[in-house]
Amino acid sequence: MATVSPPRHYRAYRPRPFTAAERKDVTILFGGLTWKHERLVQAALENQGYKALPLPNIERVDLDVGKELTDVGACCPTTFTTGSLARFLRDKAKEIGPEAVNRNYVYMTAGSCGPCRFGQYHESYTMALDGIGLKEFRLFLLDQTELDQGAAAGGGLEMNMAFSLGLVWGILCGDLITDLEYRTRPYEVVPGATDAAVKEAVERMYQAFRSRPNRGRKWGALAWTLFSRYYTNALKDVRRIFEKVEVDRLRVKPRVKITGEFWLQTHEGDGNYDIKRWLEREGAEVVPPPIAVWLDYLIGLALAELEEKAETDPKARKKVRIVKLLQKAYTWSYNRLRGALSGIPAELPDQKVLQELAQPYYHFRLNGGEGYMLVGKALYAHRNKHAHMICELSPYSCMPNTMSVGAMANVMGQHPDLLYSPIEIKGDAEVHALSRCQMVLTEAKKRAQREFDEAAARTGLTLEKARELESKRPGLRSAMAPFPHHGAAGTAANHLIELARRSR
Ligand code: SF4
Image (tube, rainbow, N blue to C red; front, side, top):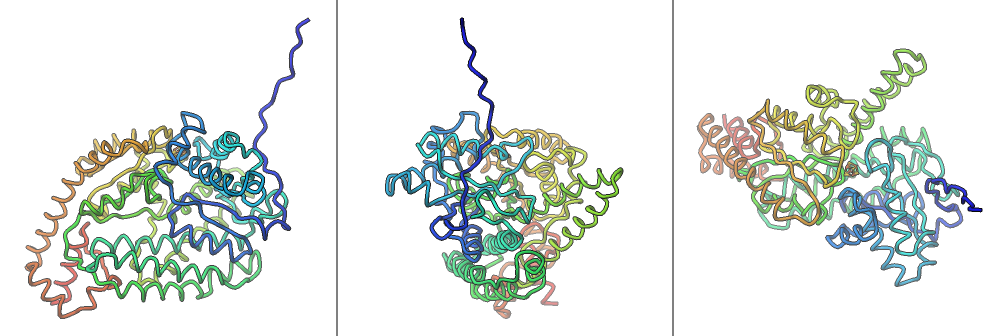
């Protein structure tokens, strides 16, 4: 008689315990951000007594390794990041052996749920680990919506409030330095001066995060993080570092705002064809996307959900008040950190405003990927003249992004003057993607020049006269000179208007 074997049920991945006793010998690997953010996250982890190491920056070869080891339909960010982890571990295993890798390293990554593969990253990782003979390797997921998650299996990784606040503030400071970097480099007088300043600034902040005082694990840590001057004082040193960089803001350049999927828009390297540096080489000024906006978006989503519940549940009403307070504290803290850098890095856009701008095209409760933000950010930058052009980085095989790009077709129909370049990133079709971007960039360059010429005609200032005025105020050639927005999208046009205003 034929026998039927019992069904093999799906079991979600569960890592082996990582115990507190192992902490001194185990290195926590992580990645997925820029080297600046990762360096500060590393410092925040070291400060909590962990050994931490960011994975090497993504390279083109990681795509091939990822394709080899994970499922074929995976989105481009999943393939790249899986390949990056697998390549690092495979090389390590050759060096010290698989048992030592399983014993001495763990990987920490953010997790989520919802209609996006982001919630399934760990499944891809486990499939790849299986493929390279490291099934026992441990992965830990950090819930990006919880500041106090307690200890992970085994107690070796304790994700309490002090731990999470260190990571979040490290990310915020990484954003602020990145904003200064991209505002400065296209106008630097001495080539390489900005990169050198960024390096020095990140190291200064690394030291600050590494040696931050311990003020408890919960409310003490929160109060200290919000109200002490520790980080603002360290950022004032960053300001002094950038003050020394000389810039020529009268160079006319189109401003290109980067939007798109979280990983692709944040990344700097082969994973997105190094598009930010490429745009700079093509003569543009890039407006990079701060991770802080994403965190603000997550708070906004949680709030929207609670507000719906609050209509029938009194307990949810209390939570709504708490989350609103948290949202205010977050924006206030970001502005406080910006203030230490003379307020030069951009403010966070109001999430309610982004939602309203996007609402006719994209419902704010559709929350896969970047949700309403792709539409909202494009319209926000366009209407407020923060950029001449939007470059949206869409990953190959990404469901949420495909929906946003579809919605953008409607936006473009109603805003034909918006310069929009959606680029599908597969990782191996560079020429095609960059040439599409170049076409729109050519028009953006013309707009930037037209805008500058109009500002010159309005103010009666020629370029020569503007340079003469500048030479009388050499402070205005510092990267940290005041930088008001006078209603133009371009840096040169705004600077020209500012010079005219000061010369009256
Ligand atoms: S948003 Fe798209 S690209 Fe990003 S993880 Fe989700 S499915 Fe992949």
